[in-house]
Structure formats: structure tokens, C-alpha cells
Image (cartoon, rainbow, N blue to C red; front, top):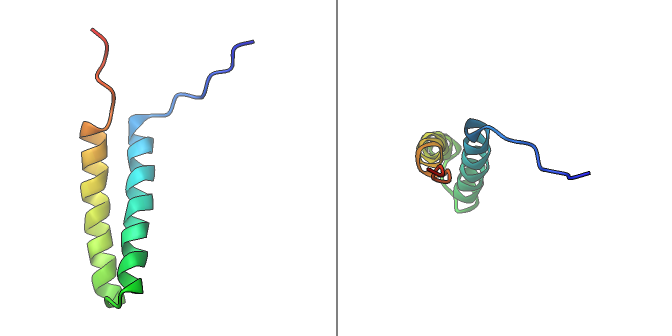
Length: 64
């Protein structure tokens, strides 16, 4: 029996990367003393930018 990892949609992978990195950015900003509102706005904007970048640029090129 050959075990393979499940196929995960690129959108799900992009969301996970963006969420984890935005959470890291938010916590890091709170740790250095940025106000919580500013940290949240920057983290949300980072989430959107990271999601789009990973979704558009993060996949392997298809084999031709």
C-alpha cells in the first residue's frame, strides 16, 4: 500500500501561510510596544498581501 499525503488546494495553503505570518507580525508588534489597533491594521494588511503573494507566486510550475 502506497501512502500519499492528501492534495491540498493552493488557496488553503496560501491562507494558512498568510494567517500564521500575520499572527507572527501582530504578536511581534505588540511585543515591541505598538498600540493594539495599529498592530491589528498592519497585521490585516500583511495578511492580504501575503495571501495574494503566496497564492500567485507560491506554487510549482506545471510540467509541460
